Image 1 (cartoon, helix red, strand yellow):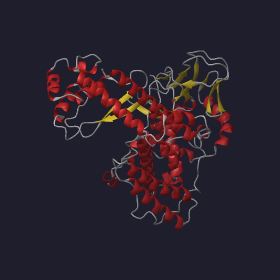
Image 2: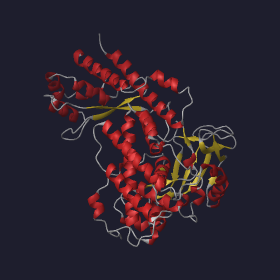
Image 3: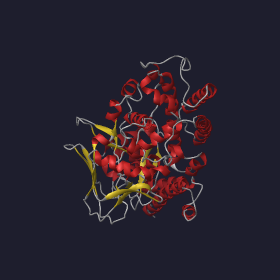
Length: 515
């Protein structure tokens, strides 16, 4: 079974407070009664922290507005509260500094092999700009086995349920329904346990990540103009809301099994655990083979991304993940794997990097029908006949993808642009035509006036989106020549990738307009 890294759903947690209110958890109506203080905190600081967490939850629980300026203001307010919370929680256990990682490599590799991992001609190294990664020790030929990792070494949804906090996970309506969030808690619980079976692996993990939760407001602001700006705000808001909810849940639950979590849980640690899952998780078959489950695969998750062929499989018979070389690697060369077909924005939001040479990149183009359009019902009817929409009534704009390369427009977007520009007579003709699917093809015999309107609209919309960025493509290219922080550079790379697609679309649409 081929494996690829998966997009995280961690940011998609929208708490159902009625469901949470009715959960059957062992809790007290007053979390401060007979409750030991959070490790390292005085009672006064603990009370202050509780108030700050409640304030954060209130700020993060409101629905996102349609106004980016309002969402930006709320994000900054939440950030200020989070800074206060992190200051109060400083005494808690946090991930050991990255300087200790290299010392953990040898014990980690010994742990892997002592529990059945099979190693090819590779080793774990620390490289500038790449951090901890996998390197070829000798000449590696395409299809050579790099390593195979037994399932028993993986942290999975199943090991989370089988752990000492399994009942806590099963009894909470959020954790029980979101295996990736449960996996983050599993990781935290094992990190807080110095005798954890997975300690040799956990000791090699980075102390921080480049996910947007680690960005400052000034760094997030660099995304203005990009569709990723709103996505980043939503991600940060949802993770802060999750932290607030789980902090309160842990403080109210008296189960001694979760005492380590209750004493040590902090925003810093939760952000770290969430980012660990987001950037490193995979899907593997469950032990009974009836479903898939989230998993962290030690060593495999240290391989960085490079576009190429999929080269990892799960062997059901031996219950192990097997990784092969997807190309030749010379001795001393870093070994890469292919994470899968993702846009640059998806790479940025879910993994913390941008591959500027990504041939699967795309720009999300949101366009809709005006409610005041007298032909809106006919246009919707044609959209349904073309299987572009399935719902009875459109509730908002549709999202299409402008692709990187010489053909930025796909068939569905082309059909939408055409029917969006049609007159009543044209709409009636295509609604009744048995050949309406031709609207998705370049040559379909459509009126020149409709065709020109379609491409003119796309050109104007793309130019408008391009003008929303505070910098130009040339200015961004110039910025990359200067000494930028890692986060600043990644934002600039994302902006460049998006502008490349918009400029290509403008040029493409211009050539399509018939004189």
